[in-house]
Each structure stands twice: as structure tokens, then as C-alpha cells.
Amino acid sequence: MTETLDHTSPTPGDADPFPVKGMDAVVFAVGNAKQAAHYYSTAFGMKRVAYSGPENGSRETASYVLESGSARFVFTSVVRAATDHGRFLEEHVAAHGDGVVDLALEVPDVRAAYDYALAHGATGLEEPHEAGDEYGTVVLAAIATYGQTRHTLVERGAYKGPYLPGYVAAEPIVEPPAKRFFQAIDHCVGNVELGKMNDWVTFYNRVMGFTNMKEFVGDDIATEYSALMSKVVADGTLKVKFPINEPAIAKKKSQIDEYLEFYGGPGVQHIALATNDIVATVRAMRAAGVEFLDTPDSYYDTLGEWVGDTRVPIDTLRELKILADRDEDGYLLQIFTKPVQDRPTVFFEMIERHGSMGFGKGNFKALFEAIEREQERRGNL
Image 1 (cartoon, rainbow, N blue to C red):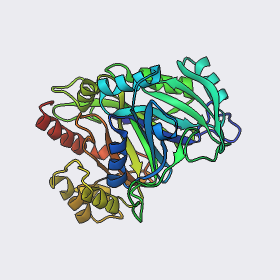
Image 2: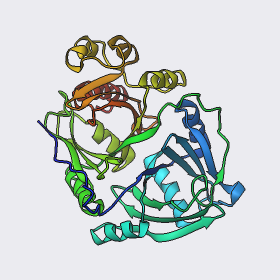
Image 3: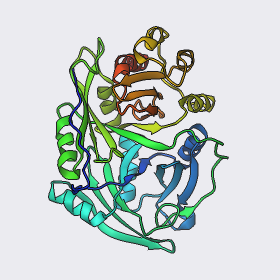
Image 4: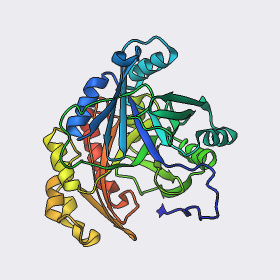
């Protein structure tokens, strides 16, 4: 049974205890940031806009900032570990492989947000501090979340630079596509250990004032062999949405179990990217070498009966293996990549929404069977 939990956005008279302007950046720790930046430029159509490295004073790390619309990825690797920060990044990649270390949030007042979070039980990692250059000043702080993931809080209203102080503007690595593949981050999904999902949902409720948006339990996300449970928390404006997954006991190893084993603990499982033309996006990304999960033709035989008319004909959905789902608010189209590194950990979702604010519940069985087929090929089911 699926329960849609009450979600009430703050009314004009309400005071949001932890206002959020949106996702500021998804920050990855990787083994080779230069090569990662090239991959996401060519395969994801992103545009490099900023760089920090030895050439401009960063002796320890090299970081590449890529954007597509409002979506911003930062790829950082260690050049020479000389401080605790460099050693942390080096050890993170050794333990987890390439992965997300930071889901940075833009907030209007970092000091107020940090104080509220700590007063409600958050662990502080960096106290509020200012950083500046000729482009202005930003205020930064950081709190801990699941695993070794953090939320850096960013206040950038008084800053006009390409990313943050210490970064310089950089030219695109390749010529950006005429039409971007995606324009925003739709949601970021975290995997946590068995029995920890509710703890982290409560964390976001208490520490950041997020409310519960959706819940998937029991048979909602289950196949003959594996299962998981998921709850979605979101800020009051629904600009930031964080589904939290945990494994459920089943006959065989779930995708969450596999992730936790190969990542070495909790972390960010996948990032959903919002596109307004999923057909063009999938065609371009496939041509660039991105691998997507396969869906059997039988899925499409009855799809039109319960999804109804969509912007994309069923035959095109079948050709490109795109999934569709409909709820009381509208419909969505979605597709998932295979893991984008050798470890079966981080992957991406492309999603095109037409009214629906759901997460593709009608596709869960088909999606998880597709994931199980990949797990079986890897010998991990």
C-alpha cells in the first residue's frame, strides 16, 4: 500500500524555520576530476564554467564546475594531500570510489540556518564563515547527514563570480549542445542501512523543517526476489526533494544492499535530472555512449491502457526504453542510466514531468526487475 503523506507548503503567514532557495551544487569526490569533467561535458551535455587547481593557487585539489541550466556539478580530485581535507577526499575515493560528498544547498541566511540546524540536533562540520574575492562575498557553513555526506549551506546573494572564491572562469571543455539535455536537479536519492530510514526522515523533519512528501513501503517497491522501502522529504517549496531508501528483507540481495556493500556504507544513490524533452536527451546521451537500463517490450504492450495519452507516442517510448507513469496530477516520463562508474553505485535518472509530482510508482516493478537483471549479470543478486 502506498500512503501519500500530508504535505502542506507554508502559507504567507507561516515562518519557514529553514528556508531553502534550491540546490546549489552536487559535489563529487573522484579519482580523476579532469577525465570526469570531460565525460559529463560530452555524455551529459554540461558546460564547464569554472576551475580551481594548482594553476590558480589550489595546491592540494583540482575542481571542475559544470552546469546545465540551474543544475551544477563539481568534480574534485586530490593533486597532493597535505591537509585533513585532502586526506579526507583521498580516503573517500579509496573507500567508496567516485561518489557524492556534498549536496550543497543555497539558503538566504547561512548563519540562521546553521544555528537552527545545530539547535535541533545537527552535527556541525564547518561553522559559518565568509569567503571573498573581487566578485564579492559568500557565506558558507556545513552540517553532516547520512554516511560521509554533508550539506554545505551557501549564501551567495552578494557574490557575482563564476562559482565560489578561489575559482576562476573556465571555457567549455567541448562545444555545448545547441539544446541542453537537462535544466535542473529534480531530486537526489540517498541509500541508508536497514532500520535507519525513519531516523534520517526524522532528521530532515527536525533539523531542516522538511516535510514528508511520499512514502513507499510493503509491496510498493518489490519483486519476486528483492525489495526496499523509501520515504521522500522536501522543503516547503518542493524545490529540494530527498528520497531516502533502505533495504527490505527479501529472498535475495536488493539494489540497496548491493549499493551499501560496494559503496562501503550510506551515500547518494542517484540524481534525477529534469528535462523538457526526454526523447532528444536520451537519443543524444545514447549517441555519446551513456548506457540506460533496458525494459522488456512486454512493458509497452499494455502501457497505453493505464497511462493514457502522453506527449511521446508509445512506439517511441518502446524504441528508447523510456518509462511512463500517471497519477491524479498528471504524468511523467523517466529513464535510468546504468551505474556511471565501475562500482555498481551512483547512477542518474532523466525525468520529464507533466503535472505529476510523483516518482514513477507504476514503474517500480519494471525498473527493479531491470536492475535485478544487471545485478545478476554482475553476480550480485
